[in-house]
Image 1: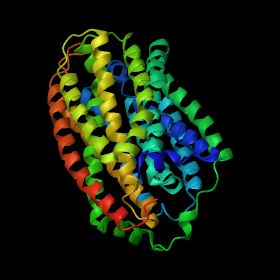
Image 2: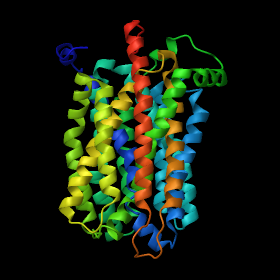
Image 3: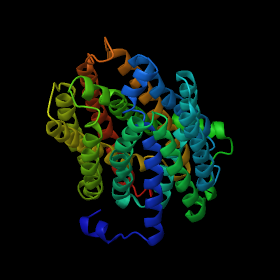
Amino acid sequence: MTTTSTDKIKFTSYQIFMIVILVLLQFTIILDFMVLSPLGAHLMKVMEITPSAFGLVVSAYAFSAGISGFLTAGFADKFDRKKMLVFFYTGFIIGTIFCALAPTYHFLLAARIFTGIFGGVISSISFAIITDTFPMERRGTVMGFVQMAFAASQILGIPLGLFLANKFNWHAPFVMVAAVAMVVLLLIIKGLNPINEHLKLKNESNPILHLWNTFKNINYLRAFLTTSLLATGGFMLMPFSSAFLVNNVHISAEELPFVFMITGVFSIITGPLIGRLSDKIGKYNTFVGGTILSMLMVYFYTHLGPSTVQKVIFINAILFAGITSRMIAASALMTAVPEPKDRGAFMGVNSSIQQLAGGLASVISGLIVVQVGKEQPLQQYDTVGYLVIISMILCAALMFMINRYVQQKNNKSVPVA
């Protein structure tokens, strides 16, 4: 697809509305995870738990989300995607309210499991909707806007979450997430049209057989392995990033919101630009560039000593630019892998593997990172950085094969949009 022809493909007003809905949807889902990460210092102190116990709270959501995704994947292509979205998003909101009400560590752990059961399926439904609605030539741009939700959760969510936790208590950020999510749910119910064209395609009537055939496809399996490696970086680094910046880099708790806010502003600006760039120069080229940049920044970030806020903001901004490039390009490429009749199942399994791999990565990170005392620096965070870099190299090699497969499908005129 040439630059000129790509630019001529315009979004309709309804497609623009859908992009807005998907951005808001992803904002609340990501916010629910992101708001927990900076609360690590609060929770470990208030609940008197270790880094590994906090890592379990983070991974509990991921594991339950992964299991839920597997259980529902076989049914994903059997229902209107809007109805599925409303059902699981409602459950996600209820789970978030439970988190807001959690009086103890074990209650919070159970609430995170409940939230994950519903929240873990939502991203896969969203990506299936994107694939059903937008042509491949514009999916990079769409993913760029959707990826803005990640940055927006930093700009609005993390600083506000930290402010609410400092002003009131750690429960307050979850109240905020639930309130925003309720508004988004109403917009989905009122404004989103039924999404059921996939129901007209011939498919296995047995959900278990449908899921099994999805697993049997070697090209799908390669994509699933790539996704597992792609999830490693964020889930290994993010859970302890705030504690690392406070205890090792000597950034104060009051300065943390400012660090995340500036980084988020930079990511919001670059996200859509990277999305459009991936449509012009190719998704894989964008992915490789983002991978190289991310590896360099991960090394610098995990080896930081006491530093100025300005230096931390600069490294953080460049790191997230690299991560954003990888996520946008990879997400767009992944949508071209499944056949139309398998989109829901593929996205469900892919999301589950992402959650399970992320949960495992979070547990491993919690076992590697050591903190001798509550106010002492984290140890062995650099080891986590090395593991993330290795996973990025392996992921780039697998993504090369996925890109080649997608190109072969296009050359054979097999529809992927």
